[in-house]
Length: 224
Image (cartoon, helix red, strand yellow):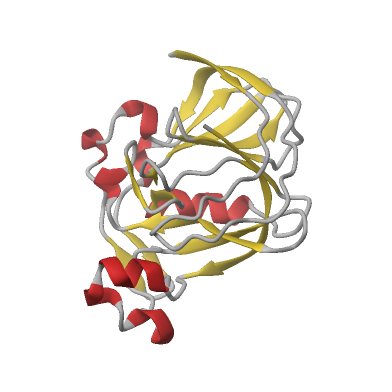
């Protein structure tokens, strides 16, 4: 399977929208990354029932997930350093650069039209089984979640952030309010369904989380 794409560098632009994601300050240039991908190894057997920190994640009916959105190691040519995360929102893929011309590729769900963003950031911190605090603007649209704005939703199988969350900051050290996170809605992978953040199948976000070391060296490049 070969997929060709051209990634163009863009500044970090976090869109102000009714979803409540704030504008990130000061755009940062993203390096150009060109790639041609071919599958080297697949991980279809890793989507079974998963016990994690006292929670039991249900098995994913992986045959219902399109093959291109299942976790796999692919050939990937880029000038970005090992450990860089490249998110291609158009492809609905997240690449974790392994080095030696290879990357771990994950299927993702992306923001709806109007809630998307692009540019560079870094993973400032990460959390296992995070609380969810929806922004006030989201609660205006969905009054049923207003109770979680201040108190937050406790971790659990129905929490929209899923099993893991990684928090993206811009070059000035400011929270972009965008996240890489898990989701219980596995069927949304490959679609534009979120309020701007990048979502992964819970089994996939656990794998990605184990690879990511927070800090400015963990660069995230998001392209449209």
